[in-house]
Length: 149
Image 1 (cartoon, helix red, strand yellow):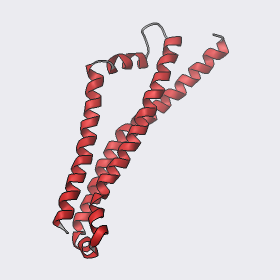
Image 2 (cartoon, helix red, strand yellow; image 1 turned 120 degrees about the horizontal axis):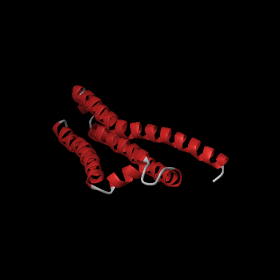
Image 3 (cartoon, helix red, strand yellow; image 1 turned 90 degrees about the vertical axis):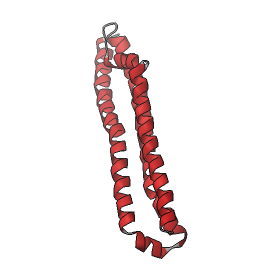
Image 4 (cartoon, rainbow, N blue to C red; image 1 turned 180 degrees about the horizontal axis):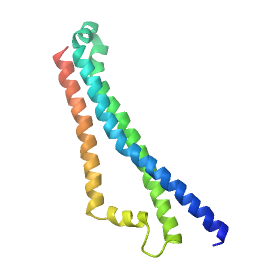
């Protein structure tokens, strides 16, 4: 590898690490914003339930599902950012294998962790968190639309 190629790949590595940091913030932020958004929307719906009931019909029933749909769209954003994060991490790992001392490199270390119990625990936590948030919103929607219909 020439000196110019090495400089290019080091700059590329730095830029991709910044991208990884951005995507990590987005992955963790998506869940927080989903919780906040669904809570705010649900609170508004409950506070205005009588007005919603006065509208009646299909719109009055569907509106209770808005918080759940917001959570589904937030999960889609989470999934996108998580996928990009994993792809970028895979490429960074390849760069580390080519440029770093053998056995060293953050992405290589993370790959070892992901293949073990810690990686599985993280996946389970995300899955349980998102499933609980989305399901609870849809169960609440069914209950609320039945209560106010």
